[in-house]
Image 1 (spheres, rainbow, N blue to C red):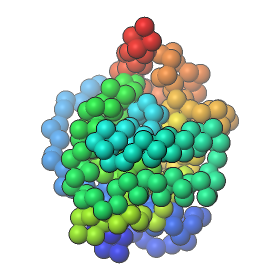
Image 2: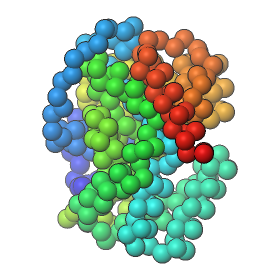
Image 3: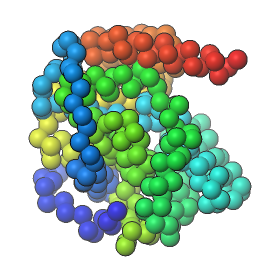
Image 4: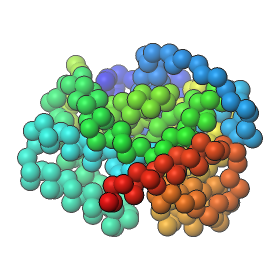
Length: 315
């Protein structure tokens, strides 16, 4: 993947935004990488469109859907699963795995983004891939998806994404995970593409630096805004899905925000704002606020399937 200096970002309108310069850079780089990967992807065969639901609106070319990845589309963190796969292939040692796991636990328990801690997490991840070829990591990523990720996709959320695809809309993952990993997951799920954290590479080799900052929080909103501008989308027609209050900036951009498997802060905020809620973690529907037909029978069936799978794992 090209470095940040090699990106052609002329299509993005320049204007003042309520975000840091690094957030804007990360968002714009992710949008550019997502557009390029989707243009290179093979065409997806069209499927017969079911009876038109109230939402998403079939044929609305100004609409698209944006899905957070970790704990929204997939159980757990994609970066952690990717790290497990790299450890299995001797990319790093046990002490590095322990440090990486502790950083993830700390982040979850703290529930906040301490700048020094976030920088430590970022540097640990970058040190693992520094000096490796992008093509090598992409190839390994395909294997890791099959080993650790495929069975962790929430069927209910997958059904929601399919509803948008069946309506003729583009569906994008938006995640802090590396864009290469996110692109693999999006392709394997039949989605349009992915917006993810862009690591700098020169000559196809990772330098150990990022383009901007991790695609997290406000940077996700910047990425969605930039992609919507490039794609000619009307954000008031678009939908966004996430489990985390950190994604409130992204959810607030669109006309159809969804809280999926929400943390306590997002659940509270969603109820206050009248946003739609879905919870697939227990197989029972969460308290709902104005759920439209987008979820449909497929999403409910997916939630039930997830519950059965979880029960089998507990036995």
